[in-house]
Length: 271
Image 1 (cartoon, rainbow, N blue to C red):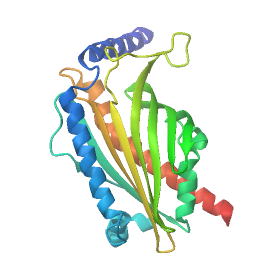
Image 2 (image 1 turned 30 degrees about the vertical axis):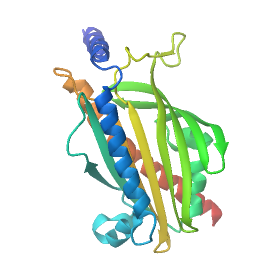
Image 3 (image 1 turned 90 degrees about the vertical axis):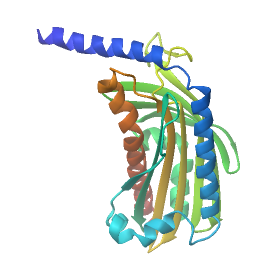
């Protein structure tokens, strides 16, 4: 009886995914345009903030360190927007901050550039990663990621990555998705990337924006994530809802925690 209940549970999830796929596909043109417009505004703000020390994003964490708890080793997460979602989609914008005592800007940049080590640093979310092209501070990367929240979803993602520095103690790294492909039967003989009419829309776009600054005998680091996912289909919120609503925030917090731990380990090895 227990085996039968288990079978029906997973059969139901399989039916849900098939149904969800028929409702998703690629984002509507209006949703993609709204995402692009929102991202442009985020990047314009960051460019302004990066021009001065007082406006640098991590200056916020420095000024609020007691209230936010970054000096106590906590990862602080906050939702930034937007006010409304695009048609048929959900836009998620989150920011997370952390502080690594004794770290320097070069320590974080070294960790972020070591793409081949991502499967170890970000396990189990990142299964494989590599740089496909590099020219100075500009990289192209590809990763296979696995996300689990009621449903397990595997995706191959490509990114354009760019590093920049304000000075020796302050810098940034922007990563913009150029391809997100959901994988069917990952690791099996029938593995393949789902086409636009088949995929379920759990992730359509993802941009991330790192900023960091040295202060207080350590390094303040901050990560903003802007993602576009499917809307929650009527009647399927019990499974799809937790995934598209929770994964963007949880993935961001996990990434910052794992990155801070890798930087801290590097500081220990350096000392």
